[in-house]
Amino acid sequence: MTVSRKILLLVAMIMAIHAGASQLVPATASGFAYVGRVSHTYRPGAVAWTYPGVQIRCTFSGTSAAMKTNSDCGYFMVEVDDIAPHKVQVMKGDGITRLANGLPEGEHSLTLTYIIEGHGKKPTFYGLLLDDGCSLGERPTLPDRRIEFIGNSITCGYGIEGDGTEKTFLFSKQNFYYTYAAIAARNLGAQCQVCARSGIGLYRNYAGKIPEQIMPNVYPHTFYATQGEQWDFSLFQPDVVCVNLGCNDTSVGKYDTTRLTEAFKAFTKTLRNYYPQAKIVYLIGAIPVSKRLTDIQAAQDAAIADAASRGDHEVYRMDFTPDDGSLGMGSQGHPSLQRQALMGEELTTFLQQLMGWE
Image (cartoon, rainbow, N blue to C red):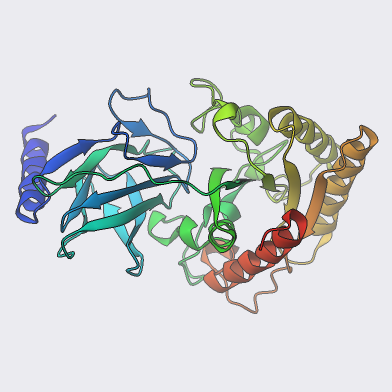
């Protein structure tokens, strides 16, 4: 570590201490509850991940809290008690980020949601800084309902905070918290586990980029990777799996509908192997009405029929209202905040009916 970085970290620590948060509760403490694909072994004494939507939940006593992470690891949404959620950024050179200050004495609830794609940042949580003499409460009880979301940039919230004028990808415009997936999970009171990456496909990625990193190859791993730590699927058995894929397979240039169909069939078998009891729901878009849309629908229908031929009648398709631009656009043609909100309500209604959830 360079001298300048040491100085920056020291200044950050001093600022946190003056804010009242000075006692580190390590990430391994029993009072933390984690939701999502996280690793407890990547860095000793810490928790690491790459996918958006990962949550850290706890209760704590005291009047303030800060978190210790690796530098420049991205953005989080912070929810404390019933206070409106707010967004924080872990800046370059910083490892201490203030979450709350000036709270009333007593116990408080805290939920941190990682809201960007972390495959290039490998976000790592080392613990919470609390007021001297304060501590975590008992580990929060997580909801019984469980949903897994598998998807691409739409599920990640790519450009959701943009206005359509952005020319390149910006982490500052990405926010998983406001996606259809996060909204539906909150509406339904469900845990939400995410395996999603912008540009990813089933048989090919956007414009054929990084062909080995298609979803079937990265899906078995804890991180976004084709090798390394294997995810333990027994840790999270969802009630329903929502899969929003196919847009990148059909995105640029000629695409092969036969390969797409076979990929959907094969991935359905993969999911059923991991999740014998879950319902599987294939989602569409939201993308505009087009040949792409009907080709994806046909491929999904073929996979559903193939599953039924094997006696599996718990595979479904749900179509979002096609995006006609009437609700505005996010960055580079991606759904806007308003479109994602509509999608969240549509999925909520569908899952209420499918799962019998109120």
